[in-house]
Image 1 (cartoon, rainbow, N blue to C red):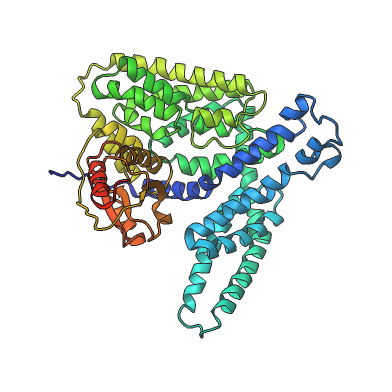
Image 2: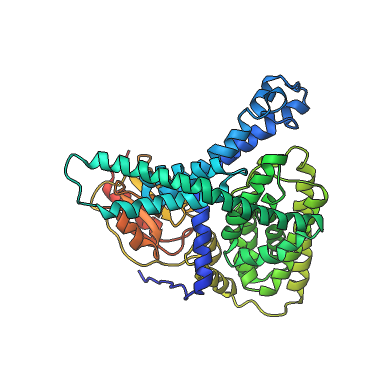
Length: 506
């Protein structure tokens, strides 16, 4: 079978560094989104302006609702405050340390984060994003000093005391230095947001946010700035519009709808499926190639982004917690009480404005579709991102892959691995899982993971061809299959054949 490979073009060094930094931040926040959602629901139900008191349930100051919400006679207690003050930052700090040095790094990172929390007067999310990774990285370096030099029988003593002593030092540093630094930075950034809001110019942030999304710089902006500031605001007022600046799917939906009606060729044909993945799946990267193939459409994206923010500001709407992924389902799940009308209108208005501007621009475009314009734009997107993705594979269509693989043992555990282990690998795993199940092999499990979390206990690993070498280092004894098209790769049929040949039929 003929094979083809794709090699991403060299990317701008500065942009790639920012992208990696954004991914680094995202990998601390995204695994803990469930905790943020739990806090958001607890806040929505039990604070003094929450759903239950508004319904007349526990609306007195000495009620059990007030006790949980931490208001009335129970001011300063409850669950809401401690969760955002302690639990969420410590989870982020632990995850940041764990990502660098597994459990040992996570523990030291959590200790270091606690020092910053205790020394600060604001939710210490920025501090956690610094102290957690710092704890994991520094502990790893310290352990390397005496690696292989400890006398037998003293390993546990040295490991436990070194982690404890270094955790103490970092906690003190966090208490006196990092907490003060984060408070100052948070104050400056908060003043900047207040200036934008008070001068009614917050919608102008779309001039930065929309191009940043297409260039894959949104993670650094969202998780590095908007999410910490939004959580701080939500802690005091119960909601924040900052969670809607980047995650609102309105503009992307409007763009894809415009392509559905006024696009040409492959772009027009693929737009409906892309719109579903974008709006309900929350994978915004699906629309990026549509902008890259006609860069003038960034005007439509900025117009729609500014409109949705303007509507949200006018209606004083906000979310209780970050909407991740940026699906309309996640947006509504985190919408604050009293904000549903404003959020709904923001989605409708933002999508409508983007649709109108994009429709005009597409109608004015007299160029003929060559048939590979979208594929070229998708390739450009992957070059900027530095890796392929499930979303881009939907747009690029079929394609062969490099590298043959054979199995000589029964295959029961298959892992679909990608860089982050979330949207791309999850959707790819669902495609492969269905094929395996349709072939009559219920004994085979197909799951998705980040490459960093792979272990050498699986039978077969599926990765993008650019990531296979990294996956082999993590799971050297597994069979590795490389693909360059996650949705329609012929290698999936080869995997099914492999399973048929090595597994007994049920």
